[in-house]
Length: 552
Ligand code: CA
Image (cartoon, rainbow, N blue to C red; front, top):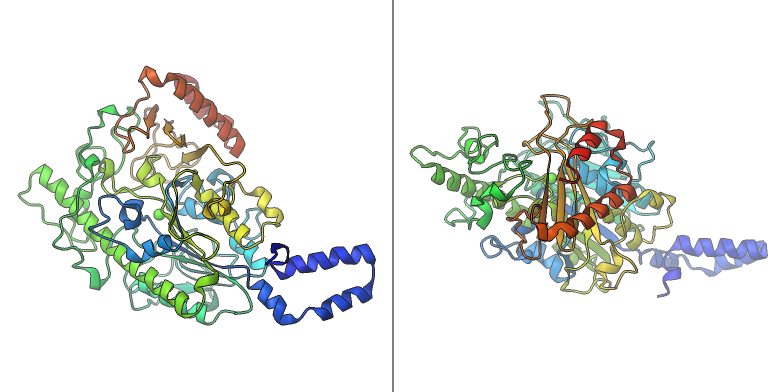
């Protein structure tokens, strides 16, 4: 079908143009009368439905389609099914590797410093702001929109015809939900005695999604954001998965016992450790021994320090993968629903996570860093007939910055003026295996929450197809969370050559062979900061650190 006539609005625009050319009322009436209504509906149905499934903290390493050490141990056949029927992106990166900010980037198509959600404490700007919201744009363009599951953006959800969310982090078992139809103001911190819904979060939101799909307005395409709480900590598998992998020893990553002497002083003693080799770092070893650890504590009495580290890693991965198991099952349920309802053929299904996650790599169990395991996001997209089944893109650098423009492109809704405020690029050509006219050569990353959680310094950097250069400036600036103290930390640079060192175990910043590469990347980093409007000039403390350390 000619794409010019792909939906009703375009047709009306054409009629309007014809009207101004002729000025003939009779012609309009003739045209309108000649267009049968069912044909218009059929045209509108060529705009695909969009089902956006996002989990929380789901690492590529815990999805079997990506291979990796856990692929055979803990397969995810249903998530893999989306990739088999569509495309998998191998180079999709988050701009700020933390929950709340990533969600704001996905909705707005803007970097954190533009959409103002730089930390966990910032609320997504409301409908009166000039921040774009892809859900609201789609709603205004004729989509029926809904959000079900985790929101985690502090302000009330907007842009959705219907929403039902678990405020804040939510609870795994018998969670609390609030819906747009409840008639009560949204609160990100519900009262302690709020009514709970019996069941397991991951199962419940899938039930809610199916209910909403069953009762939607079938005259409109839908945009459904289905946001899982899992597998975010603290990890509580469903009762049916408490024994999942119980007798299996989970393989350790080679970097669990990494020697950090290659690191800059800026990061050597930082971060969230599993094995507690470094005293300033918080440890999983301590956490999982606590009696209130949700999925049962670990008795480490009599263990050596090495044995404690190994036991903590096993506990973490068993709990985490148990939570992933329910996500995968429920992805299967929603895909089955699409099949049975005849919706598969015209529904763009996306599966992703709000960022990656460390599963013991570098001895970490959190995210936030620019390092690969949490910088990389899983991403699968399926739309039969439009996206070739079984495709993989490993070449182009993609980003959560691109998601909003991608949805608008598939929905034929890119003619909104708000798109000019967005900073990404539509992924449509990449998903459809076409060569885009021009594509980015590097992604820009920035983590603002200096020391506020998990003892990680403020930093920014650049990753291109081969190298990653990071500047750990180590200052809270104006992004501290308001409690505790966040003293400056030692600044430093790190460079990784991902072609020969994909696991980032050799910081080569001080290797003279890379001097030219470093010079080029620093120039490109400043260009990207300028392009995206992330200007350090408003932070004299940061400029001072830059002046001292930029050329060291
Ligand atoms: Ca997250």
